[in-house]
Length: 322
Image (tube, rainbow, N blue to C red; front, side, top):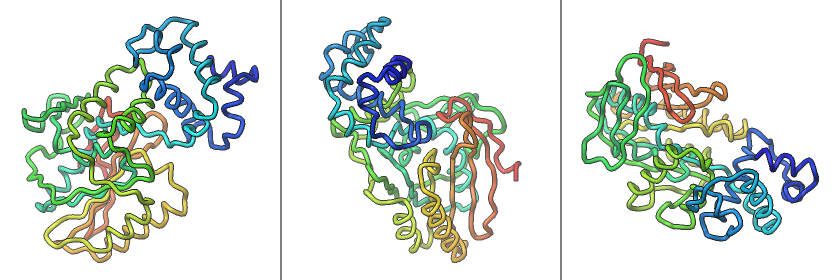
């Protein structure tokens, strides 16, 4: 990225690539868009100059050769990479389930009902299957030994409600560009957005992909349309759970308002036999997310804890913090 910045200032291929980019450099994750576009070519075996230096191709990084090769790949693939820059960054960090798990267990403990899961900004849908994984939350464990993916995080604070009677009644998610990781091309697309030196994150992604034996139940739909449609008809005997993780800031204010209004309407009509829950894990700054839960009847909003954006650590409060 430093080499690309130098090339941009010098008016080289990177400047040509970004000449018509009109997004926000940080909020639209420009660095990861460039990285993902080029690294997808590496994963597809179409960047032979870069492959000898790139971990995705079992290469060995060498400086400045790797950076120079990266810029040459940009020069050789300008038209294709311009199109690829339009793709929203999707990393779908499966370890975020470590913080969300505490929220799901809290909902199950309070309601004693099966959870109908609705996720917006689902990407590949890994978080919809949070109950399929095994967890090591500091000294606390959850999940069976048969789970094919193990997630671990540094955990401070009290244990979540590990003994809650968790049942999943239904799962569905939406995304503007859902990823089917059973398709090799789409699998390469999501892997391309990962920083190649972060082997632990890549291993977790590949573990989540291996655990996904069939496409996730995802629809291609705007978040507000999905929420308005799905939350209009909760099922008696189930708790309807809307959740999302590190996606809210990508939505325009008008769409955020529509979602909030739809949840409020559903909450106003909620009953003990058909309660509503809204679980969010969204950034408070670039260093941490806040895990918040709001439930109806009642509508009380609580901060359950804070976590690293990729859930490398979780600072849990449970219901102690209001």
